[in-house]
Structures are given as structure tokens and as C-alpha cells.
Amino acid sequence: MATRTKQAMTTCSGRLCTSAVHKVSAARPAGTHRKRPADGPGRRALLLGGGLVASTLSLGVVGPESSRFVALADEEPDFQICFQDEDCASALSGADVVTTGTGLKYKDLKVGDGELPPTGYQVLANYVVMLPKGTVVDSTIERGNAADIRVGTGAVFAGLDEGLRSMHSGGLRRLYVPGDLSVQKRLAAAPGRPAVQANATLIVDVQLLYIPGVD
Image (cartoon, rainbow, N blue to C red; front, side, top):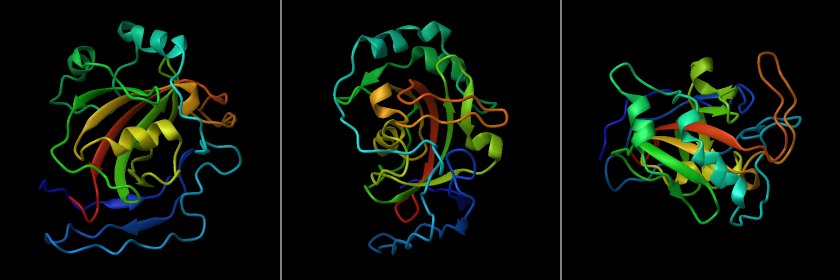
């Protein structure tokens, strides 16, 4: 089992997040179970007032638009969660594109050595959400705090949730999110951030740090 560094976990504090903070306990011995903390008021109420709200979606296979989206790989933005000792450009260009049954596409730049997140568990993750040409919509990297997300519960828009649930902790992944799995309500412009139309295609770079109580 991978060893993860204990970190502060925050719920979303930007366009995807609220500002509440709680500490994450260290990994527990094998055979023990971590009691899940109860959600507090407003917890996971992401993007109040028209933000990136996950909604009940019809998860069908998408049309030709998503194929064109990934076909422009040579023009896609640089990977946004890259470390000094890693060649993310080569990893991104050389990674295979995987397409799921819902139409989500992704590239794994690094497959993590940890666990897969069980449905309903919290994960600590960094993400950078972008429009296809690279304009940043929201970023935990810029805020300096990773996000606390309970997967499989509709806490974030469907494409991000699906992408996280099939990642091993420690992994790095780029998601190509089609409109059916994207934001379902228009996101108004904010200081330094563009407006995002409902059903907009998005690129999301994700780093799954660890799963408290599992890793």
C-alpha cells in the first residue's frame, strides 16, 4: 500500500469549492475502518449561484464533436500539474487515449501506485479545469489547496467524478469532458475567469493525491 503524506484537505474554495477546512487523519492499520465524517452545512454545495454543479445526466455515447476534440492533440494545452523532474509534454503526447462507455476520454500520464477510490469516499485531489484552448476556468494549484471531493455522490460535474473514480491514488490524468458530462448550467464570468456555457467541452488535468482511510 502506498504511503501518502498527511495534508490539510479543503472543500472547494474557488469556483468549484467552499472554504471549510478539516484535517485528514493518517492512514489506519489494515483491517480497521475509518468512520466517515458527517457533511456539515453547505458541504459539497459546489459553485452556488450557477457554478459547476453536477446534475442528473443522460450518460449516452456522444457524437462526432468529441472525436474532433481529442483529434486536435497537437494543439492541446500543456499539462498543468507538472513537476520539475517530469517531462509532461512527452508523457502527454505519448499517452494513449482511452474512451469510456459514457463518452469521457482520458490520457494517463502516470498511473498511481495506490488504491481506487470506493464510491462515497472522500479523496484529496488537485485539478485544473480549462476550456479546449487552455483558458483556465478553475484551479486548485493557483489557490494552493487541494480539494476534498466525495466521489460517486454528484459533488462535482459528471466527467470529473467519473475520471476520479477510475484513477489510482498517486496518478496524473488529463480528462476530455464532452458536453453531456460537463457543467449543466452556465457559469458566469468571474475576476480573471471566463464565462462557461452549459454543456461546454472541457479539459481537466487531475492529480489524485490520496484517499484518507484507504491509502
